[in-house]
Image 1 (cartoon, helix red, strand yellow):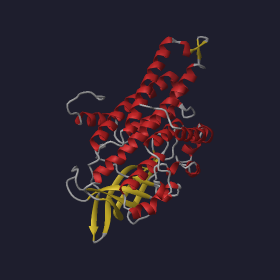
Image 2 (cartoon, one colour):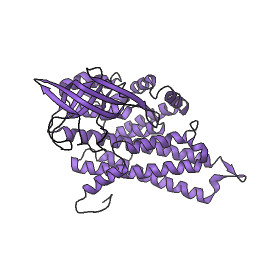
Image 3 (cartoon, one colour):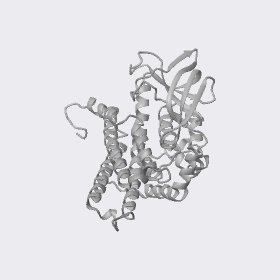
Length: 380
């Protein structure tokens, strides 16, 4: 199998890499965190690069690129630990709208997403769900041709700044039933919508969002709602896996640079054999994560059972690698690694948030186990 990038993919990678290195350095990121965790200016710069239209079909003003191009972009954004919710809007939200929404909704929202004018984010997580996607207590009610949604969602990316939410809501069935879940579009300015914003551990912005008989537009009916939700979450897992690879790659480079400059007993600590072995172990975990990120991206086009298992497998390996690389990097740096003024701790915080997003390692280990048939082992 050929893992080389095409010329177009390499040019895309170079463009994003150049912007991250020159336009989104640590000083700027640190200032954005202090200012609240989101920058309209940075968002416009990404839109000017054409990144917001990456997953939007050409018919709606986008580029119509696929999962590999998304992986390329996310790796480079991971190196810069970019705070703005690119994956949540341009990949997860845009892919769900373009694949499952009615044509009228696509025409109304996708061109604005492609230009960076509108942010449509998935608001699916509920307080008691423990990452189980079919656990939906938010309720939808139909009156004539109109729908309303009532309930609450947690940790919604830039929930107080988004223009609209894609909301899973239960039309029928028990709380944990896979049937009876539909997806709705609810505008942030609609009646009954409330948001409570807060900063996440990595310095970004999220919000708890409440709905009280809020007017909603049906996107996907209850027969296919859970399927569409799972597909959108899998897009998010693949994107975060690529972001984590970029973040770990950069964190490893920062750690090696520190070991080659920090001196103890008159010599650089990078010459100590025990520390070199730990760096080698970090590199091994990084490459394991990279291969599983590729695996996740390439499996996005498979049928649901194979895709869901593959994405859970990737999340298990990524979780193990992120924890190992992050912890080793902090330990090798010593006290400076956790100071706010130094970059290493910020990578560790972002990796921790990625591990907790769309299901943590233990959750996905259970998912892999539940999907085993005649074989054993995570990678079987």
